[in-house]
Image (cartoon, rainbow, N blue to C red; front, top):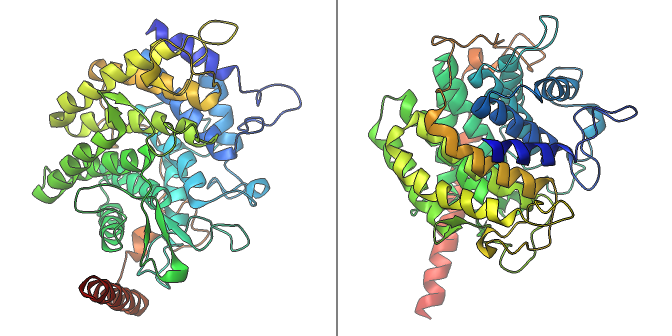
Length: 418
């Protein structure tokens, strides 16, 4: 616990949003807005694991300041950079606050559960059947680069949030959306038969080819969502298979049981965002054990050695404890530093406290956060009342996708024969 306290302190030194002249909920450059939401998700975890209230006020301030005029984590000043995944990380932080019974905001402020529901509702209305048979785009606005990309982290955050809302509220519409998202990701091979989760695909080719990069946070988002669906469905065989498959699939991210970002870490090419990704795999692996205790042994066999290696790597800088990225380096600091490295180390260390932590609450087991089914919808119609009917667009999109994939498959066979 003392190690987590030191790591949390050093991470929060990067944050200046609570100081005069700065904006609550923003990290200074080079960090994007989404990572601040992810960081405060880590601070909710820190309170949950340790009981230390030191950072509760600054966490609440940040999470409320960035909700935007419609209380859905769509602040106008982030329009040029905000994608579905960015909004998703703030929504997931609010979801964690509801599940952990993090102290509720004042009654005249938006509440944690309603904020999570608002993010879910806004994203459900963006589900796009015009290409690829469905899915969420990476970007929300057409003028941002990446609008044509449908990626796993955007859909994974949506899936994760839907599964957790189903568990928390008992409302099956959330579970239906989670199921739909999983099936769509499988249909375009973002999740393969080995339960590897790939980065994304482009709708300009109707998602007929997949970017095969694997990132830790994609696997983590899907694992926790699947664990919640397993719990919500009372241990259904299909969700047990999916959950166990995803857990086995995380093997690709561990070298002698030490976590690494395989797509970029070995070649020294991880960007600012990617240096934080291991934090989320650690966070969501640990949380999955509360939904599926049968995962505990497999999860702890990886998080224990990873935490020891991460703590050893926190040996650099002027203070002699700055965290680097490459945990496989042992106690030889790799020379890198930043919010991502500190957050990843903090999450993997404090995640080892999961077995002594209480489980997440729901609205029938002590959850106190107030929800709003129509949050974020800006209308009387919420996805909870309209449901998820299969539209003609869904059928046409799915049919077109099937045809396109069949054409590619036949072409590939022809090339191999010739």
